[in-house]
Amino acid sequence: RLTTMAHVHLVSSFLAAPWTHASEPIQCTTAIVGGGWAGVYSAWRLAVDAAVADASSVCLFEARQAVGGRTYSVDVDGLTVDIGAYRFGMSMHLPADLIVNHFKLETVCYEPSCSPDAEMNATLYRIVDADGHNAGYATPVRAMLREALGRGVRVFYRHELTGIYDGGGDALAEGGASLLHFAGGGGVVRASAVLLNLPRQAVERLDPASVVFDRGPSVRAKLATTILTNCTPCQAGPVAEAHEDVKVYAIYDHPWWVSKLGLAEGTFASVDADPPLVGRYHDGPIRRRGKEPPGPAALEAVYTFTLEHPQVKWYLPFVRDLAGEPLTVTTDPALLLPLHTRLMDYHRAAFAARGYNASAEPPPREVVLGIWTTDKLALLPSPTSSMMHVQTSTPGACPAEPCLRGVTPRQYVDAVATPNSRRRIHLANNDFTWTGYQGKPCCWAEQSLRAVERILVREWALPRPAWLDKQYWTDLVGEADATAASAASSDAAAAVASSDDALPQAALWRAAREWRRLSRRSSDASE
Image (tube, rainbow, N blue to C red):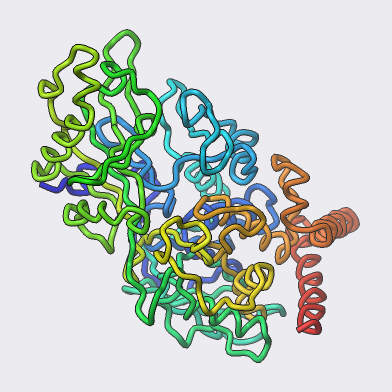
């Protein structure tokens, strides 16, 4: 039996709002589409942190019923399980400085020994509550959204974007706008600026006539359109074969791997029989209550990718809806019993060495599956940044994209950041980042946050956040943009000081807009 979503409480579901329909276009100065890390962050930066925009003019649209995107924290049996993104390093100042310096959330080492992660060569951390239990990586996303809502940002759930069209005028001038259309009666939105925090599949599903696909003559516009429409990573032929990221947690009444085997840290793998195992002892949350025996507890039995271990496709038939929500919570004995038997067989010698009988261990009460696919119809697809082949160890599993031959990382980044400059349409999502650029691998929240912070500085002239490491920010946005953003802020402050204008953000907006015009002329001339 597959447990329905009614039996599982999404950590962020309290933020859900009813589906709205508008007969007249919804008016927004800035429309942000996609409620992942970058989408919520941009709304929060504009309306709360930098406060350069009238909060009520900032609109956030999300296709699902909750924010977070691929940062997906879910409560199961009193445990907060992250089936998506879940950890970060302190050198990843976005998001680390936001988590630690601004929201002052409690964190602990991801590995109990605080050993450096083998892949990242750095100690990684996760967010915990006051009792030391996993709080979920969605915690800062929820915190930003609460503050944005409190300030007046408008949030619309169950709004899936289908196309963006010319709303008349030049968006860089007064009165110019784009029209955003949403599926299922979601209405039409008129916005002066658009920021897309959408995965690759959602962008590719947009109406080809959308103005996000600029048909202009510039080299940058042509490159952006190619990347957004016909440049899928890991595609060997004309039709991309879907691959999956697979997480499997077995929920036990007590953590036998810790209490009986002393395995609080480390990895294990055995893919030569079904069900395959590629797990970690230290990943899953464990509920601890004073002197009471610990439990329930989640053992991560699998975390890998079908590109690396195709054997884990064994778990796919147990997924409720592969193209829908990535979460499945099940008590199906056809999964629970074989998985438990496999775990016991793998650890049988370790049990015996400590005087225990593995056969006496009761099976898990349920299994949590987090299955992320690159299928074209996926609502929340697996993250796959461009040039992903440099990060895969299986030869031939992920060929390089022919569409990027001769393209430099900087050309790529600039093109996707603003695919249509005249319509002020911008894009930030880790699917549209260059794997390894500036030393950043796929597929971490930092990729999206770096992309959107660069856009916010360049297009809105936002100053450096007080909580963010200064050198990191300057290296990210570049000396020229950092200086220009500072100058725009100074000009705005001077304008406010010399007038009766009651809205400082309006002056900053005017200064930023003038700077954008000058920057665009310079950019167009260079092309």
